[in-house]
Image (tube, rainbow over all chains, first blue to last red; front, side, top):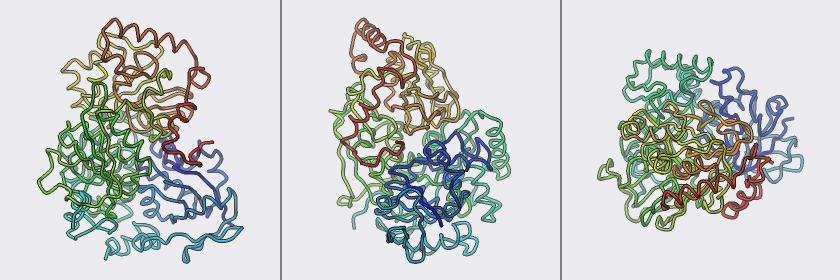
Length: 164
Length: 457
């Protein structure tokens, strides 16, 4: 069963992977092991594929560094549920195929280490104590996510989803 | 229907009549790529099955984020980047030492007003200094833009920021934008475009300071209205709809200080007077231009910095560096004891050129004071203007620069001596009785009090 890792507001990309551990500082094969090394020591070792990150406002703010998301992807993070997301981080997650879903309830109700399960099709997060309805993603973003990311989408379709 | 600048630009470029909230697919006039993302960008292009960028004449490549290379791993990455630039036959390439991507993009005229530019760096909002819609994106988005020459955007809501009055002596547009961040907060402009009114005729450098720091409010873009570079059509319509309007009176503006570790934790300098510092950084795309170095030199001329403080000066570009050499500014800074770094990002992002040790306190003219941003996660970074930076280097403490700029030489020197004596000869910042971080955080808190803001505790 995936577990939840709960963070607060304004989690910046320097907390996710500090600049000094950028892939081009430490190598492409190692940088993910520095995920949350200052903010949550031991995270990269203890996290399990499928685990879900929970956050407050403005999750992923700061730099455009996609390797913050790439590190989470490599570690197998199954989804991120936060009150709100910083814009570049949100795009990076959609592009790399990590579901990013908004809920203002999650950060209040989910406890660190809770066993949680995401029902992406129905937009529901199952908690030990009940369920939380998540805000549905825009169709455009959902189409990219369903393809596994923007590269996979473009390879399959040759262009962006229609904007109507 | 009246349109904001963002709605005008995205309607024109997408060829559809779009409003805030609509999705738009738009051509990009340039794509900016820098050294620290090149591996991921190349991987993205490869995965997309694209051997060539869509238009090599419209790609601008920079080596600035960790330059010159501080380690063999970085040097290898730079070599890969140079080989890629050669293989792609990209003519617009600025190697290590030429300067920060954003400064060069604007000052060398790569930013066409009224167009959309995608940059691989979050501060690509800077291009709004000349009326371009510059948006920072991650490596895969950049790879897609390089492959297709297009990107997708949700047309942002806009926030109208108006400036009235004129700056007094010792106050800068850095103080003005920090005052705006104090008002709007680090996420108050999330997904939005910040439109600046009343400052179109400022020098280009001041406009870069404004537009670039909209990133620190979460903005997708920051655009200055009515710049000399902008074409006639590039004005927001009267009656355009804004999600929020903020007016800042420059006449009454005080020097501003951002207290670590939040950019929106901003106070008037008067509340921070006496906070000791170990290191001062003057530079970055926010404050690394001739005017910034001149402001620092106006304080440091003929004087030496406090022996307990290091001063690092990193020009934003070779052009700014050479201008500062030609007019003697660089000589003044060097004679004052500054370390002059090669033009580029310098220690702003903690990768090269004077990073911070644990528990050191830095006064930086750059744009971010996150924990761990400039080196050790235990260092603390205050943000301020070049005037504040120069005074901190001179005295070893944060102080109001106006007290120095307005006094006679004798009073000036007496004040420096007093501040140096008050600072005393203390060790590491955390054990200093003089360190006032907690009190300053409390002072900044009321404006943006959030129960869960203390994510580090």
